[in-house]
View 1 (cartoon, rainbow, N blue to C red):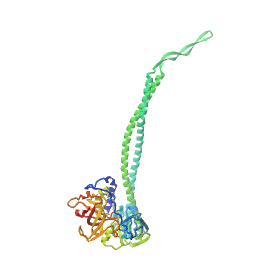
View 2: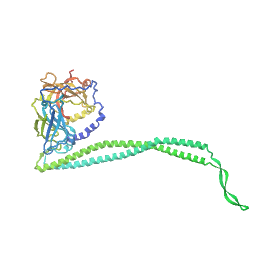
View 3: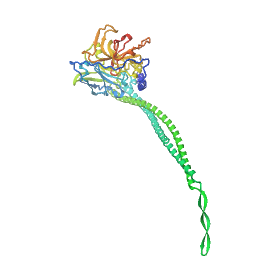
Length: 557
C-alpha cells in the first residue's frame, strides 16, 4: 500500500498539480454556479482585554535528539514542520539536523490584533511527510525499507542494497536527462539554422523586388536609347593600299594604309545591346533568387515549426527528467546517509533484533517557548514524529473537551477555494480517505455552531460544499439541532478573537438527491450547522463540521 501511495504521489498527484492552469477555469463536475453576491467579508474586530497580557513577541527553541536517524530535512523532501499554540500555527522553515538546537519563530503581533498569553492552550509540533502531506511516507525509500524488528547487520545489508538501487536510479535518471538535453541541443541548432534561412529569405523578399524594378527601369531606358541609335554608320575604314613618294624626279610606289568611307556597325549600338542583355541576365538571376527565397522561407518555416514543437515536447520531458534526477539524487543521499548511520548502529549494538527508525523521521528532544522576552515553559519530548505518528501535543492548561474544541478553533480563516481546488477535490478526498492529509477525531464528537459565511460557497467535484464560517456560538451536548446543554459564545472576554470553522457538507444523499441551496447563499448569510467534528490535517490543520442532511445546515438570516 505504501508503495502504491508513493506512485500516486509522484505520478497522478503531480500531474494534477502541473495541469492546474489548464483546469483552473473549469467548473467542478456536477456543481451549479453560485449566483449570489460574492462581496468579501470583513472579520469581526478582536475583543481587546485591558487586564490580559498581549503577546508582543513569541519565539521557540527546539533541541533535536542525537539518536540514530533523529534529524529531518524538509528542504529536500518538501515536507513541513508546524508549531501550534491552539488558535494559531506557524510553519517552521529549514531542517532540524541530528543533535541541533535552533531558536526560531520570531513572531510579533500588532496592538490592534493581539494574541494573548492565555491564548496559548497547547504546544504542538507536527512533521508532515513528503510533499507536505500528513502521514505520507517520510522519504521516497520508506516503502523499500522493512518494518518490524531487524538485526543491525541485516539493517546494513538493507541499506547497502538500497544504495545500489539508488545509484542505478541516479544513472538511469541522468542518462534520460542527458538524452533529452541532446534532443534540445539538436533542436536549438535546427531552430538557429531555420531562423538564419528565414532571415536571409525575408531580407531577399524585402529588398530584391526593388532591385528588379530598378533593373526594369534601366532596361527600358537602355532600350529607348537603343531605338534611337543607328545600328550602322558611315565611317573611315583603314584598308591596305599603294602609296607613292617622289624620289628625285621619279615617284616610287610603296605599301601603306589608306582610309576609305564605308558602312560600319555603330559601337554605341553594340554597347547598348550588350547592356540590355546584361541587365536582363541580372533581372533573371534576381527573379530566380526571389523565387528560391520564397521556397526557402516556406521550407524554413516548416522546419522551424517542427523543431520548436520537438523542443517544446523535449522541454516538458526535461522538467520531468530533472525532477526525477533530483528525486533520485535525494534517494541516493538518504541511502548513503542511512548506510553510514546503520553501520555505526551495527558497530554500537549487539546483533539482536530492534525496531529501527527510518531516514527523515524526526525526534525532537525538547521545546522551549519564550513570550515577551521571558521563558513561558520548557517541555521534554520523548516521541519520534513520523508517518502514522506525526504530531506531539502538550496541553498547557487543563480544559474540558468542549473548551479545548472552542479554544483551538482557528483565529485566522482558511482562504477562499479556487476553481482548480474545487475541480481536484475528488482526488484530495481519495487521499484523505486513505489517511494521507486526512481527517482525525476531535476532542468532541458532535457540535453545533452558529456563524456568518465569509467566503462564497465552494462546490467540489467530490460532492461536498465547503462553507467557511466566522463562529459566533458553539453548542455541545446533543447530536441534532434543538436544546443543547453546553453553550459557549465566541469573541468574548473568555474566548477572544473571531474564530473560524470549515463546514464540509455532503450535498448529495444516498438516494442521489442533491441539495442545491448553496447556489443562492451569499457572503454574510448566517447559519446554524450541526454535525460530527473532524480535524483536517491539511497544512496547519483546522476543525471541520461534517453535517449530514439538509436539516443540519440551516440559514438563520
